Length: 221
Image (tube, rainbow, N blue to C red; front, side):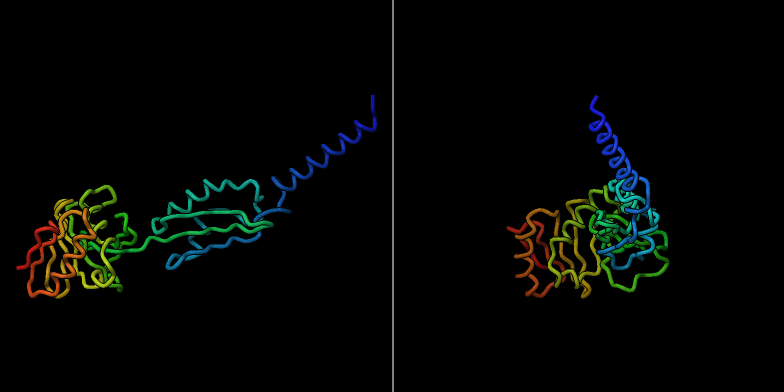
């Protein structure tokens, strides 16, 4: 028997075992710092608490997919990506949901993002002016909500700033209400570029109701 080879093998195994213990069990290579980037209104402490990772926890034992699911459970978070930055930093990158419209439901003011998700619910109207969304059933799976938000996302900022409300009794019946009292019958979300071009020309004309639902046959009343 080659005793030297056996001793060398045992020594190597011991080294590997020690290295594995250091990486997977001990806090020698543990989380020393948690960094949150991309947040705006969301408190850093809330994001860190949702991940639930104690300082000192071994870096290699972190389940990053599970941590991302936990962070994304915060309703204000749209996306989350978590990475290890050696030697001991856990970096949480988030994208917050941005309210685009508001709805008043049962005396409460609901701020809604581009996906139809309720970002924030308050007892008073938000300080930031948002157009109202008027649909029968607000929600990310509601066809009329999806249609209205799709239309809103195709509009240039100069038009969005002039909106007081969007109405969508049906997915193909979106109407834009302007703060000056004028209305635009938009229809469904399709052919947005053609409708915008037609609307740009029509808004130069005097009227109160502009219909661009069929870009080839627009009208002003």
